[in-house]
Image 1: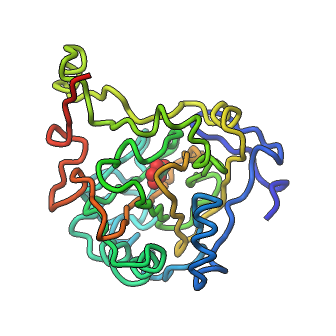
Image 2 (image 1 turned 45 degrees about the vertical axis):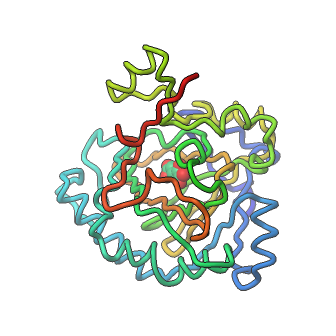
Length: 306
Ligand SMILES: O=C(O)CCC(=O)C(=O)O
């Protein structure tokens, strides 16, 4: 696919620069699915693998149906439409609902058994452990996610784990999927003062920090920037985008800068999950383990003397 036919891409309220050296298309690695050495080469080089059509489309759509039923029960869908269409109520905003994945067997099966787990076993070369927490996003019209790396949110165990971003349905440029900043994982010169900071760590000898934590506020949100074009100008590389289909997934490491396109539809929700996988032999971040993981709540906070 050439970038010449791309519509204007908007992310976090900013129009991206559409010049060929500033925007590109995610590389589809489905062709290398059975060649582990090549997958490793691409992870090292690109920082990500976009596996187009790798998963069973029907299984993904079954998971979508289960999720949209739960979104309907949670009262966030417009009742004038069949729930499977995922039509948002007006002003629905950015809906984050990890809890609806917990007892949702079609989602649990899709993400944590079968083809996806076998894929990570192949990539990691050993048994795989996944986080028990599943980030489920149903993003209404408006802004998507701002540029960040994942490590600040999940860096207390291994740093070699991977995120799997998975769309539940077709995601056009208008509906707004994930985008990756090309080569950003290699820019440790620009990342090192940002990426190792833990969003749940705070200075317990600083009254202001302690007050914020008590009020349930962040002292550091993990955001790298609110301005995707400015991040690109600083890091170089291109923002890499695509239109997603059910069966696709995009996986990447903890040091890759990514963000999402804004949802420019009138009323559709963009439904996706992000889940995490690591080598079973490596330490795991305790915030994401258990039936009801601590996550970024009070039990996830860590006081430091700074
Ligand atoms: O879906 C999104 O908008 C953000 C997802 C994300 O940041 C992630 O998968 O790490």
